[in-house]
Amino acid sequence: MRSVFDINTLIRDDLKTLIPYDAPAYPDIIRLADNENPYDFPAEVTNQIFQSIFSQDFNRYPDTNAVKLREKLSAYTGVAPENIMIGNGSDELILTVMLAFGAGAAFAVATPTFSMYGIHGRIALSRELKVPRLEDFSVDVKSLIKTAAKPEVKIVVICNPNSPTGNAVPLNIIEEILANTNAVVVVDEAYGEFGGETSTPLLTKYPNLVILRTFSKALSMAGMRVGYLLARGPVMTELLKAKPPYNINSFSQAAARAVIDNLPLFQERVRKILADREYLFSAMAGLPGIEVFPTETNFILFRTMLPSEKVYDGLLERGVLIRYLDDPALSRCLRVTVGTGRENEVFLKALDDILKSQI
Ligand SMILES: *Cc1c(COP(=O)(O)O)cnc(C)c1O
Image 1 (spheres, rainbow, N blue to C red):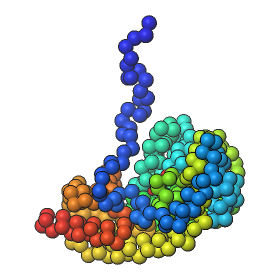
Image 2 (cartoon, rainbow, N blue to C red):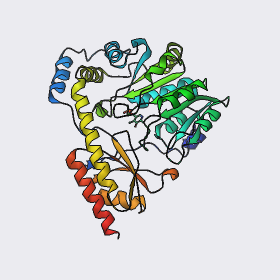
Image 3 (tube, rainbow, N blue to C red):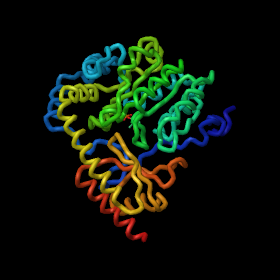
């Protein structure tokens, strides 16, 4: 006979302490927490998407191979369409890589970094081996190569430029790592349009390289969830086995194609964000008790003399949401996304207020 239902008999021991990802929705707040692009779509691009939507068959499944989008991305990246995979955000692709190569094994990752590698790795039963970055957040190349040499390590993850620290890894360092391991080396270029060097030229030489990109940050498309991955044939063959079918809906595919057709409009905004970042960086550096870290992205990591909860809560009270970081390697650090000119001013004023009220 069926006994009383008890969830404890079903729970995965290894996930007992996993805290589900959450992003609180505060209405009417200035959102400088998730490194989104502060500028919405240009109206002309929205119109193009709507036009293309009229000819869509919404009763049919989307193109599971996103053929048209991959052709456009091929022209944009210089990589052949068969070496491109589209994901429901690059987040999904991180999970796909973990499932295809990491399950039952381990991955090495240069930390502190983006939290989703650890979360997806855990769900996919891949053990995380953290390789701490050096004092200036540069990758500890020797340690990373040493860890990658362990027989259980199947994947090495490097975020470039790195979140939340903002710094980039030079291409020769990426190449040094590739040349010294047979593990799959994932280079996450989510912020590649803002700075750093792309590892794309290394694809022809290293069959174990996987590059992740996204439409969510520089290309203003976070709400539509499109990311992509670049990889050579043998690696791609394995990744395709773990890719969910029909993972990108028809609407998002159409939107991503429209973005590629109108790239100059988006590139102009990237330049604006970079100029605003320079202003924000200098203004923050001029505040007493604030240390700012150099960045090649659309966000700034900074350390305060106050406990970071105080600064985070103070900003929230003043209507600004930034990113709280609970990594012990980043004590008293917070991360702020570059917003519009006005949003940056509100943030600066609020931060100045908080610092002054504590003296
Ligand atoms: C934002 C971000 C992603 C996820 O992007 P999506 O395509 O929106 O899933 C991946 N990697 C890093 C480092 C990011 O910051």
